[in-house]
Every structure is written in C-alpha cells, then in structure tokens.
Length: 349
Image (cartoon, rainbow, N blue to C red; front, side, top):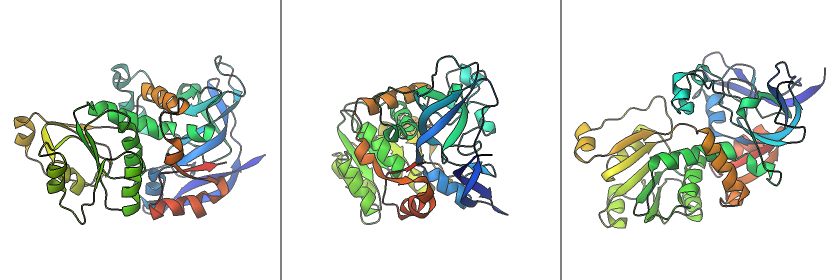
C-alpha cells in the first residue's frame, strides 16, 4: 500500500498529546459524494498548539491541519460539478444542513458539527499530501488564485464573520484586544472599512508593531500603560464603540467592559474554556450595549474571503510570515508559532 507523510495527533494518558510526523496510507474515496484532494497548502493554527497542550479536544490518531487548499485529483460518482484539476478550498467544519440551526441560517452552530466533525481535528485534515472530504465542504476557486494564499481563506472567513457581527460603521472607534494571528487578520479586515480610529491593545512588542503595520492607528501596551486612560485620551472621551476581544480570557473581557461607549458592541472572539468574568447587567441595560460571540464563519464569509484574496484587497504578503515544507512543520513551523513572532505559517506538503 502506497504511503504518504502526515502530521498525526496521538493522545496522551491524561490530556493533550504528541503530534508525530509519520508515514500513513494514502486515503481512498469510499463514498459517492467524496473528493480526493492533493493538498497544496495548509496553515498552522493556534488550535493545533492547543490540541497538543490539552487546551482543545481532538480525536486520537487524526491527521491535523484544518486550513487547507488543494487540487481535485479524483471525485466520487455522484459529484458532477467538479473536475480533475480544479482548485478548491475546504470549510473544515462539516455541517448537516438540516438541523434547526442550519435551517435558521446559523450554520456555524450546526448540531451535527457540535458532535465533532471538523477536518484536521476530529477527521483527517490537511497536514498530508492527500485528503478525502465530502463535496459539501468544498468551495471551487478561480483558476488564477495562488493556492498558498488560498490557505488563508478559512481564518479570513472567521475574521469577516466577526467584522460583520460587529456592524462596524464609519464614525466608530474600534478596539481589537490581542494581536495574535487571528487578532491581526481581524484587524486587516476592519482596516479596509472607513472608520474613525482603529486601536490595538497588545503586550508583545513584535505583535504590536505588526498591528501598526497592518493598519492600526494607535497601540496600547497594558503592561506599561493604563488602558482606560489611553482610550479616553485617544477617543477624546468617546470611548470604544466596537471592541473585539481576540484573546478571550477573564482579564481581557473585564478590560473591554471598562472602555466601552454607550451603545457599544463587544464581540467575544478568542476562546478559553476556563475563563470566567464578572459584569454588572445594569451597565448593559442602562447604556444599551451588546455582547455577542463570533464563532467560525458562514458559507457567505468563505465566498467573501475568496474575493478579497483574488482581488488583492487583503495584504496576503503581510499575513503569511513563512512557508515551510511539511516535514518541517514540527521543527520549524510550531517553533515559530511558540515564539509568537508570526501571523500565519503555511505548510506545503
């Protein structure tokens, strides 16, 4: 049986586990609606690190990598609209399409997906030469798109979804808390929108400077500056109309509730399953503020992400820090991620 190199997660005895580069069998199409992809690019996500460290669940003996794009190499007999050689990108979160949430237009909250269907976490993903997925998760790409850039479609769709929920308007003072990879991608999307000010709050100097490079008008370091005083000064006492918490810990949530303007929208994007925070409900009621969660993206967000990349409306060259061969995903890719001096690292199988 022919083999291929893959980055496979193996659970530990308690939580987390190891990601090991090993030879595995090539996947085969077993269902009529399945498609065999040759993976051309797969982004490394912070979730991959969390899986290894026990901060995010994943299935044992699963090929990781959920931000992938590739070329169609074989299709099942019921797939009629894709041809061999087509470029595609995957929405790794497989939805059912018929549960109550899907039918209400809330596909990111699909009940079937909640059971664990994500490719690259619960089903084999893109840190390999080939992957088999159902036709339903694939978006056909324009022929002129660069497939390395297309690996940004999934995280970019999440950022677009967050931006849309925030209902960003021209007179808004927008604050992004956290300039990690996703915080920076969200900021890149928001910076395309004409707004009053874009303010980044970040403790790491490299990430803070990257935020300024990607469009932030102001940078606040909470370790050396008083956040509330700085927001008051910068906004001329207007405070923050939109706050996106791209970190998701107790401290950042409570920070957000100290700087929000009347009528503000607070979007909780970053996730920490253990975070807890206190809030006064009357602060929401009296000033008609909104708190919303933003989780992954809708199909239309994928379409918008593809358009932004194809039309070169997003600064792809500034978002991709490095490309590496698959056999260096552990020794180089994960190492760079842990050093926190990167936006996206793309593995090329």
